[in-house]
Length: 141
Image (cartoon, rainbow, N blue to C red; front, side, top):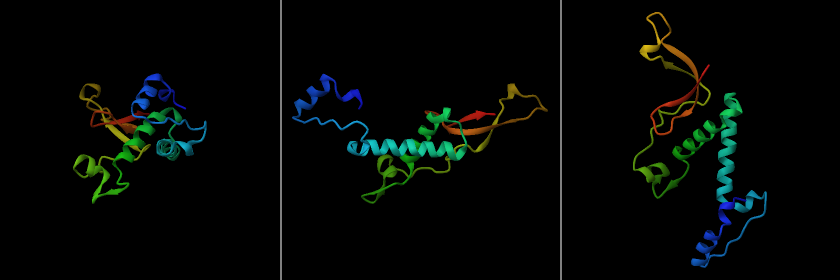
């Protein structure tokens, strides 16, 4: 159980709105409902991505972030005539940005790092999407 729901401030907040606090039993994700099922979905999908791409488990963080990005943008349910992404943001998502986790990719050397006869590209493995930038996270072999 997360300790964030056992502090006195939280109990005071619940009392303010006359809400009864019930704690679920340990190791029973079924009792925790939607949150636990979504957490399990994210972890299992990230685990699958790592296994299918033959990427070491040390990159589980990148796999989880990629999984969350995929879940958030994929058209998973239909609400009032709109898909969830379009309902939230007002436009249809761009799918051309997606890459396969673990695929081979190439990055261009900056001009200061190469000579005229040296290779212009470095072979890498795609690990995920950069947060806050329009770029990718890669593993240089």
